[in-house]
Image (cartoon, rainbow, N blue to C red; front, top):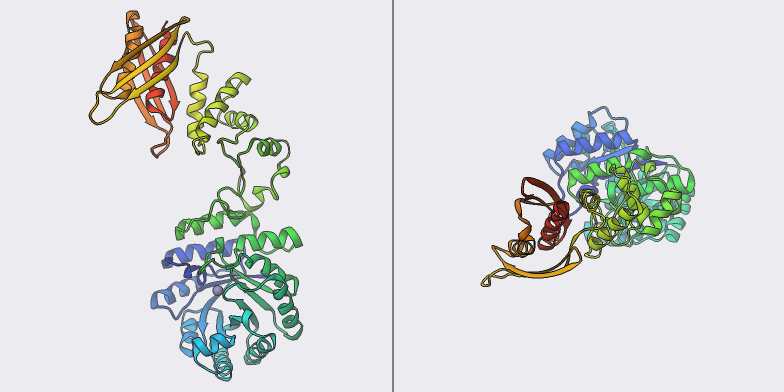
Length: 484
Ligand SMILES: [Zn+2]
């Protein structure tokens, strides 16, 4: 099974995308490295710059065949030849709709021009793949005439384009069975994903005897895109044992294209999306830890990825325990319960907990005394543009409950003043106060670090949370616990 990658031509037709020659070359090298058979490097007729970019790729000494797209215009074919490609992908409209409405020509004129262009490519030393544009909306009899005409002129491969993605697997199968039986050259399929059927149709084409499949990395392309290379390669291997390209480099290739095009794949995109091998729910993580295939169709390593556990409101304790261990911390059951509670607290706010945040939570939990002598029961802070920031706190210290309020230069200062008023007679003072936001955004997890002094004794403590006022009070109370 041959793979033609058209990321650099059809993929580049993704709205808003334009690749510089340097980027095109980087992608072409990677496509060659993973073992794509044909790289459609662009459309030489587009501009002098595009022609130059294709020429550089064509002269790079890659193993893959390098192709340029061309319409049935001798000037287009000449531009492809000038770019030194060894293959021309000649696209000729095949449906009545495209021939009459777009081209405003007759079928006979199209056949004549097609033959002329193929002969020109041949005389210039390039092979031709003849593409039937809108082939999926063309009667099979017409397609046979279209292709036979091209093959007589010298085309050594032909291709049905499902230009607007309207085929279904049954129709694809029927069409390919008929074409493959009658034609003596490999028949390719070029699928678009308008109905989400590009991969299913490509598989149907393969089952019915197609010899080549067209695709793009990450499924880039116009509208809903083309058949994604990574899915085609993996499903051919998974269901039919067909080897095409080097699967273990697929993720690397996908990332490179994402980085260079700036077009992000959706998180839930099969195989290469951020969540494709990420597990959050406790039940799944527990299953994965016992046996990975419980909740994964294939191992992430198969396409060069690694499994990821994410932590949020569905997190279970086993996954957290394992991640903490990977971060260097062995948690006992009591500590694990506290960590899980904090993670769920963040998760309930619709957040995914990052490693940096988990580290802060671990630090927070590990630094907490088991039986605090002073603890926060309640707290209210009021602030605004024309009020004096005020805070009321209720704390229990040595089994006695104290309520106190304070004012200050903001809600944190007010709350800390109220705490100070409660413990004031113990001579405790705040000597240092610092806040770090662990993640961006107004819902960031904050890490508050404080230093407290009592006489000549000084302690540091810290706390993490999403509410800066409460977290500050917790950090101070934690320090007080170390002092009294
Ligand atoms: Zn296309």
